[in-house]
Image (cartoon, rainbow, N blue to C red; front, side):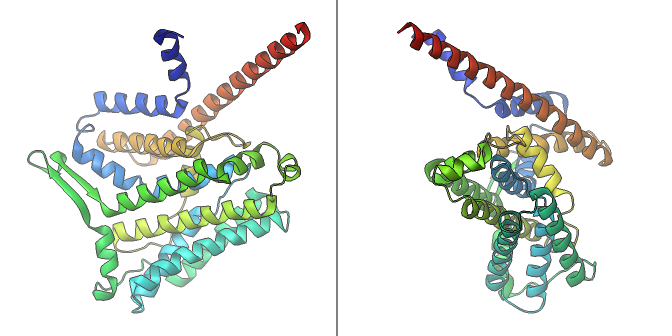
Length: 348
């Protein structure tokens, strides 16, 4: 095969989320002043950390044929509880693991509701979101929770510090900063991606999303794997709670409100379809970066923040249209291949 033929084939294998991100990024870089500055890009990457974690979590549940609407509430609840524990004098080395454990427990709770009690994922996780948000409101008394910086909270200071600072000129717009939070986010996503692509996690999730009964007949423990995915989702949501808590050095009880909606938009924009059986972790990351590219561009243009949700809704519709088109195209291609194979077998 010639290089000319191989090149288009290689382009076709690139996820559509990559093209969407590149198009949005290039348009923003050309039309929005100061967007393509290392200072703004550094800020955008840091701000996107929480949404990236939640988008990856949402992608896993969508690929499984489910959904997790509780993650916004888990972000609020875990953040408030961790901040409350430190405000009570406990060490951050105790508070942060406790918050992560709480995320795992809520993920387990969601998994049991869906698999054992047979409650539809939309209803089960929506109810869990309400429970988690209510816990956050009750513990915080609907007020911002802060803590006094001390040796016991030195871990928070470390997580919020900058791992790398490169000055390419004068001013913040010419300064590249890499936060420890960004590094932790990259590591967490890399671990999930490794587990998804190098272990049975990915194949089992695809199988569950395609057809649960077929997956069961093939020997997959459907109940166990669905619970595992919900627990991973809860853990990533709690990690997102740590990110927002460290960034602001305080926690508002409603900090996670509507984050599940944005995560769903990012995951769908990244090629993860609502019916399950198709999608990717890198696609979810690209979806999150696309959303924050739009948010950053609108902010620099001085557009009112109330229009951000409108833009996100439009992006969700566009993402679903693209996903439907790609799914139909792949189905048609598979049908053509199947018919060709059938003809070949008949001729033989």
